[in-house]
Structure formats: C-alpha cells, structure tokens
Image (tube, rainbow, N blue to C red; front, side):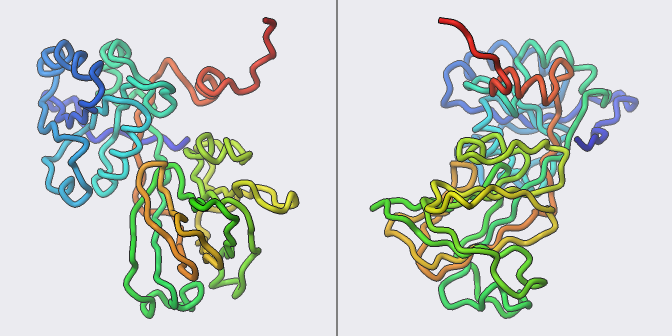
Length: 313
C-alpha cells in the first residue's frame, strides 16, 4: 500500500480540525457519540457534523477545512462518505459499528488508544483508488470515437470506491454486454458477455461483490482494475486484472426493463439497450488511516476467513 503523511502538523500546538460523519440511523452510534464527544472535544476542534444521509458531493465542497474525517458507522457508511468527499481528499478514520469492518478498522477504544499516533502521522495511511463512471445515451459514438469532446452530455456520472456493476434486473433474463478495454488503442472491443451482469472493481472492492462472483482478491497496493462476470453463459470467461490506466467501455447490446448500473451497492442508474458506460480511474483517491494493530492480510483472514481451515462440528 502507498503510504502518505497526514495534513496535520502537531508541532504547531493547534488542535486538529475534525469532521465527524456519524451514521445516526444506527442507535449504537448515537449512544457512543454521547460518551465519545467530550473526549474528542478535549483533543480536537470539531469543525462540522453534517447529516450523512443528506450530505451530497456538491454540498461537501462547502464544508470547513479539516485535517481528518472520523466516520462512525461501518464499511457501508465509509463507502458512501468516500464518494461524497472525493473532491476534498480528507484522510478518513473508519470506526466500525457494522458487521464486517474491513475498511472501518477502528473501534472507539482503538481510536482513543492510537490517537497520538494518528496525529503524528505514524499510523499508516493508504491511498485507495476510486473509479469515475459515466453513462452515455444510446446513439453516442462507439467507444468515444477517439475524442471525448464529441460525446453527448452524459445521463449519469458518479464515483465509486469498490465497484461499478451492471446487473440484469427484472425480468431476470440474460443481458448482453460488449466489453472494450483501451478501445482508443485497440480500435475494437475485447469480447461480448452474456449473463446476469458484469463487475468492474478496484483492488479495495475486490473483496466485495467481485469476490462473491468468483473474482480474484487484489491487494490494495496493486495499481489495477479487475473485471468479473456475473453468472456468464460461457464457462470459458475468466476474471481479469489489468493496469488501472486503461479505460473500460461497456455497451449494452441487450437489456431488461430492470437493468441497472450499481455503484458500491448503494447508488444506481437505470440502463437501456445501446447505452455505453465508461469506467476509468478517478484522479482523486481515498486516504484511509489504518489501525496499527491490524494489517491487510490479518484483516483478510479475520474478517473474510481467507484460507481458514475446515472445523469439526
């Protein structure tokens, strides 16, 4: 993983500026904040506490400057806030109140225990790649025609941290997706996939939907993108990993009424036949602060039961 220094300089003697992003729908988060807030206020300046359910990307750009964002909820909360704050690139500290805690590595106790290390920059901080996803209407030049300037106005554009998945949807007939990787260089598509959909995932997202669909686990330190098919008609299709500098184009040759593009399992856009989707690396990244008591491989074994031995009943 790529390491990075924090924005905060403890030598100034000033308190760090903290943005608190708490998922208040979770009762345990609300309860924990009552006890945690006085502790945090003694050690930091809380510059804003926006409602995570009503905060959007455009409004996030008007938030006060902060050195860190503490995200209380779980992996799902961290995913949504990573998309919302993508333009700010504030280092995020995930406090887990969910089921897995693969991205949100800290507990409240861990955060208190390692607070000084976080401020001094001795806690590792990785830079997680994000995806820029654009949907173009039917009739647009195939694969961008080598010049983005002639493309029509997109009907949807957003970012994702984990993945961008095209799912068949009701009435759950197979859909047909034409896949092109670097078409501006190859001048052709790579293959056509018939099945229940396709997943384009980052290394961070390789352990999410991609893994459930039989895709590979990709270390977050790899500068790559992986593609896995969802229940492909052909057993010959295998997941692939390629350099993140490559653009990925998907064209829907055939779609269902309920076919959708789903980002991180949270944000979606209805799709129709002949529409094209461009997926590429976003210029900004998620800066994720890591719990020094954990590492990626221990998390993989503990949270995802990677390489776990069979147990006796």
